[in-house]
Each structure stands twice: as structure tokens, then as C-alpha cells.
Image (cartoon, rainbow, N blue to C red; front, side, top):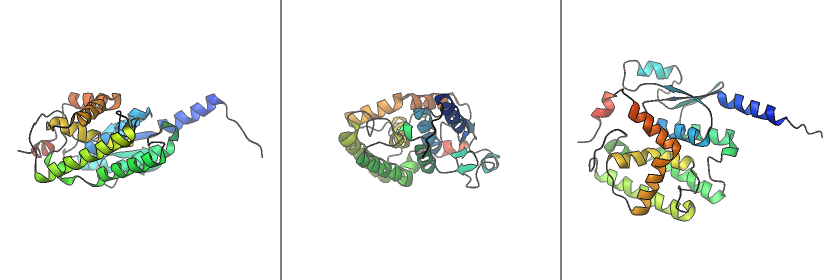
Length: 238
């Protein structure tokens, strides 16, 4: 059987062409936690993409999102002729298409746990989401402490402690920054917004996440936004 080896320059050209076809549709960076997750994963991995921002809570928001997805929500990843409209599905697609980026941990046990905690973040913590909505610009220490939100905070702390102690080695949840960290990055911003007190090791983890170039860039661009989504501001807890 004959094996053909592509010229490295051609290989890079083909890779660039594949990557250049990615478009990520997101909402306001100040408010859209779901948009933040795949955006941070893309930027952290150095995968080129085009960003399309749809302003939330505007008269034409639904119409603008419908141009990209019938699901009516952001984020949406456009990859060639494919449309992927769920944050976790987007990240799984990226991990499959760019295995060399190691978006999931390489160790089998670590990868299984990383997928588990990302899925738990994806489907759970409804009380935290309701009582402590994402608003990067705001500072609301002590607000939003419903019993359900407190329980969610406790569970998140358990997840972080176990991941950091078993796999993180005092860095990110599984050593290197991964999809799991991208999924908890909006929670880190929430904890800062609402002044959640954490154990020193967990606070140090939050500081590392906030300092990560991809997360720091998202926050910087969120802070620079001038648009206000009225409904999201109205949702802020008393």
C-alpha cells in the first residue's frame, strides 16, 4: 500500500482553510455565559474563527439569531455547512476536529471526570443561574444568596476541590486549561461579581482563571461594551 505524505506547507494551508471556516455567533459578552464557554475554548486553543455578536434583549434579537439557528439561542457555531447550536456540543466538535489542541485532558480518568463536571455545569446549578445572573461589570457583594444558590456554590466548591487535588496539581482543574475550565469560567466571574468568599486554594484557582489570556480578553471586551440588555439588568437580585 502506497502512503502519500503531504508537503508540510500544504498541510498547514489545508488546516488554515478548515479553521478559517468557523464562525461563532454569541450574545453580549457582559451577560452571555453560554457564549463565553466555547469562545474561551476557541481562543485558549488558538483556533481561528470569525465572531458575530447578536445583541440580547433587542426588538430584532430573535430575528437576528434565527438567521443562524432555528433554536433561537446563542451560541451557535457555523462550520462549513454545519450548524452546531449548543455550547457543549460546540466544544465536543472542536475537540474532535482539533485533537492536537488537547481541549480535553489526555489521561483517560481525567478526561472522564472533566466531561462529567462539564456536563454537570451544562445541565445543573439552576438556582445559581437564577439568583446570581452573569453581569461582569456589576459588583453586588452578598447578593443572590438564596438557599438553592448556596447549595450550588457548595457543590461547585466540591467539584473544584476534587479536580484540583486529583488532577489539577495546583494549576487548572485538570492541569492544563481545558473545556472544563472554560465551562466554569462564567461561574468564576459570577463569584467575583457577587463577592463569594472561597477557601484560599479555590480563590487562587479563580484568580488563575481570571488571569488566563482567553478569559481576561473576554472580560476586557465585556467591560468595553456600551450596550445594556434591560431584561438582564432587571434580573439582578435585590
